[in-house]
Image 1 (cartoon, rainbow, N blue to C red):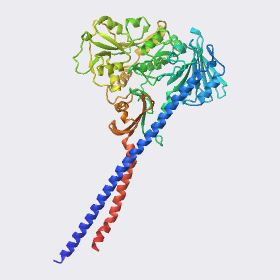
Image 2 (image 1 turned 135 degrees about the vertical axis):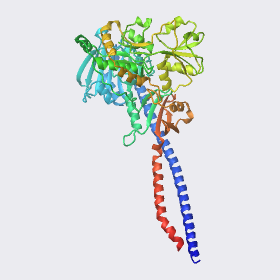
Image 3 (image 1 turned 180 degrees about the vertical axis):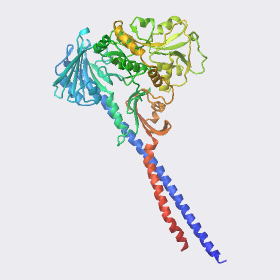
Image 4 (image 1 turned 180 degrees about the horizontal axis):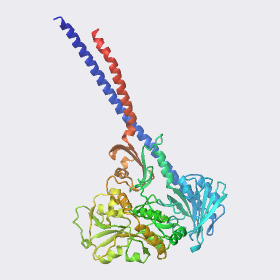
Length: 610
């Protein structure tokens, strides 16, 4: 029995060592857990403070930019001696250049007159895109654009100047540009600055916003332009890490969801499909060579067919025209920022060459000539959910039906369905929201329009009634481009291009614009419903809010950028990005603790034997 003391000794040693290891492990786990907990809280609080400072800095930048633009517009609009009749004074150029030197965010300063004339000074250093767009050389610092003349003699003169205002080269072109019909001119007031929504700058063909005010003692209006590319670049810098990689999504958007600017760039483009030039006669080639860029209407909110994102033309019809351009050599410039009714008026006054997209109606037949159809868009009726199936428009007798304001088929529907109370809404989105909220019983538009906008703006409680009969009304659902009666030869070329668009090209465009899926990229609106919800929840403004974005745990920081709380800045960052440093420290602590424990084990085994 001599082995019992030995066995007892080993048992005591094992017990002591086990207790020591257990206590050490428990202590280490508790310590590391506390370290991770407090480290995570510190990282979250630090990120919240960092985002607060970043958003405050961005907010101050945007407000400062807005305030400077308003102050400059208001100040210079008071100087009546800037104009002499329908011309600018000789001192205007150097004076405007000093204004533009004060901020690279200002793209241009100009004066428009009641007769449609224009004097504009463009800051070529405002953005690299500007210099490329107007074909300026690296030595050019300024560009003046002057529009003068009447009717067929109206000219647009481009003068490229260096820093000392020495002219390098002058070129001119025919134009029908009329400053007096532009929104910045029409909405300008005396002693008050008007700010437009984003739209396409006519001369630059790039999006931006304009501040304008009337000059006293004349019919002239002074305006200051800010190109949105400068704001995009600022937000891109705010969303980039030190290594230059974009680690945060940053959005400047309106409360309704429309994006003003972002660091995310444009939506992904479809894969390029080879476009072949079509065969043209020598006469047609000469006509194209002699035709200046055709001015094309561009709506702001008829997605996915024809709309704009921060003034940039987008949509199915825009891409069809792009194919036409590549096939023929015709070039297009887009006019937007106007309502459909105003675009029609622009076409009727010959300020626009192509009105699009249009349906074949009796009213439109009197305006111009139609191209071949480029797509069919079936109509539909929308209601709230759980409404009895509607198969004939006559079922809506005695009820209210929403239709887009200025729509060409309104007159026909009123004629054949006088007992339906037709109410016009400013947009398809407004109709969707009105129906979803029960403000009106039903809405009427093309189904693809409704479905696209519903998905883009996260609108729920909508039921579709497809394959509805509109008899006895004969509604044509084909879409066309419209030119003036005098442009039959150009229309022949455009029709030839439309006929040569391949099925592969059409399928690619339809897949891009008409595919309904959660994975479909957002166009011009914030991509996450959480941002719109947070914009409505003032209690969550200025806080780091946890959320799941695209199945990734993330944090959202959102704050208003103006006093009216109509525009918001949102920063989205993956949770891992914020907590990664804390996790790395915890991992290092576990490794060090484990190594120390392994080193202590031999000592703890020997010690009880002494």
